[in-house]
Image (cartoon, rainbow over all chains, first blue to last red; front, side):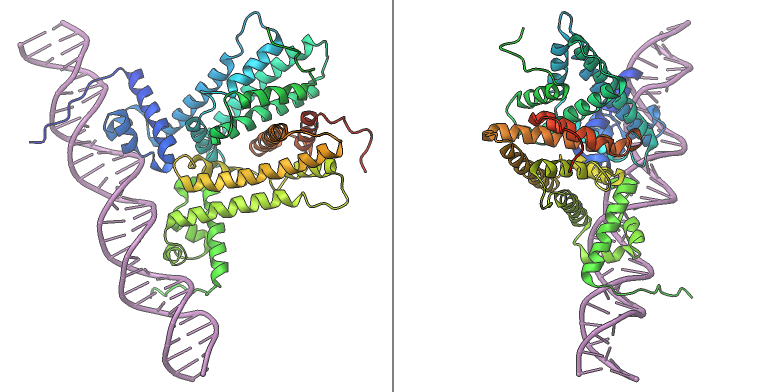
Length: 213
Length: 213
DNA sequence: AGGCTATTTATACACTTGCGCAACAAGGCC
DNA sequence: GGCCTTGTTGCGCAAGTGTATAAATAGCCT
């Protein structure tokens, strides 16, 4: 009677990606507790047993999912930096603006970020994954700041540069959180405008006169 | 043979507090998944069944625990504001400094904050608890900023005041996160110094000349 | 001292969880 | 077309979960 369920064989890489995506969806929607193997499998359109065919256990699946998440986030963030024919200051502003708008400002992404980070205390592997992503981000910020200041003919020493990067990183992170948690409290582009202004104040840049370009 | 375990009767308020503390400890250490009734009870020095005597269910226990956490955090933060015989600017600096040092900068507190916030997406009660705490904090910031600017004989309109408060809030939050996640990367007092400087730049305050007081 | 009652323990239960394993069938290969 | 590999299913299991409830006892009242 009970006909066995029909199925398709997918390529290995495709299946793994689907499972990772289903994991992130489940964690975002139900939290780590609700992200059971059965929930994840259901969302991926397979049965729970299959997961063990691709991952040694649930732990490893979660870790790979978090790594993938961090990778996508930093990738998107850095993408805003590749602008040709733009002044350092414009590139910095574009970087900040990109980080303070969709798709980086997003409830789901924030939920994932917070959920995984909450476990970073107990799980060294998660902590390391975060640390690497964070340092990469801050290095990126520091590099752009150095260019901006150089264009202004200012010669900050290493400590000053580091402190600027820390402060700017904090401004972006803090505004990102506010935007993710309460998007409806801000008009479109408002967060980015606040961020750019705050960062230019931090760097002591004179306000832009008139329109850009 | 199996002697029944000895126990002491505690006052109701005391027991509830102990259970809430044990819950926060468990969540911080093992995450929401690992914070089972048995784990919590063990840490509180009672048996699991007792929890149901004080809370309708696990859900309510977690919610009360989160409310207690947020309450303590904002309480500590605001405590730094009650300084008599201090200029608005000194009070603002003290506020920032208090928020960027122990005990507010603390891995455990951050872990709890992130863990609960990760579930705010799915749990409206948690989301509301956070929203209220956040808005209270920002109002506090806005009030101090207004005083500081008034002392400088500046008359910001409501929108400008709001944007300053948003930016300053972001700076504090962002630096708080950096400090919690990587305390060993900063020398003592460094985060607070960076924060105060960044905020004074945001408000366009001239740097302090010479030593304070 | 002795009982009363609410706090606390202990045990049971239905359910879910991650994992192991054998059967099955999809799709490439000869 | 038939076979063989292996991706995939389906089911079972032991451990652990939150909840329910009965039995015990600590500590106050008289």
